[in-house]
Length: 78
Image (cartoon, rainbow, N blue to C red; front, side, top):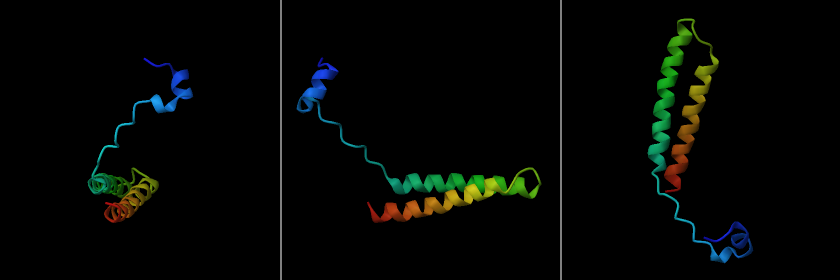
């Protein structure tokens, strides 16, 4: 087992890094949008009944908008 000092002095002796895992970002962003949509419905109901503020509604709406931008980015960079 090489020491940290020897690895820092001779980085070519390190094992190569494993490849990055493949992920379908379209599905990841889509799932995030669905979760933010559920949160938006809940926060809207709470706001309309007077039990919640308007800030959580804006946060969920912003999350959905950013997720939509993420979907566009994921589609362009497959």
